[in-house]
Length: 188
Image (cartoon, rainbow, N blue to C red; front, side):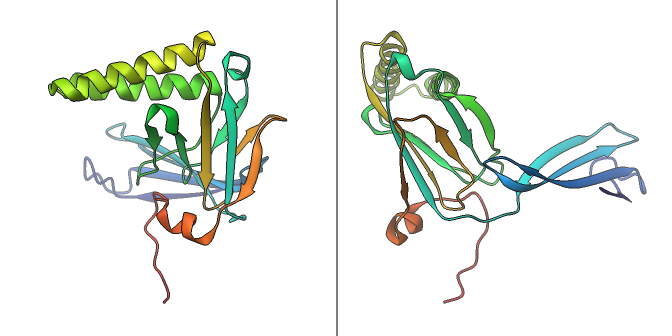
């Protein structure tokens, strides 16, 4: 574990920002670095977890129904999740964080995002589509609809843990289409 004191970018106090980092090995994620930043003067706080290891690019696919709501999903900050039948896809951005949940938790995250988008959009067509998506999610939870959950991770830190999950290696053309949430440089 390392600690340093630096100037706070928020309150500008000298050497008041305590930056702590530590690395550890986590199953499925590999080696990670946890960082915590806390200002001793103004209380500003930020925490982040970054995967350090890079593994083979991976894609997991599973058919979802009511019996699969408790299936464990480990999503890294670089992974994309999609449910094509519902027109849902979440891609990582610069502030993307990893999480461990189950399928029901993933569906709740999608629901929350659609509800937020619904509250922002006054376009009748968009509102109608958002309501259709919410009804589709509800149908999956009730067991009236089967859909496909796809998890794609170019750095291989994610997994869907279930015997019915199909695991495959992402192809080069699939990797190029994915967002990673990180600034990357191509050496070509």
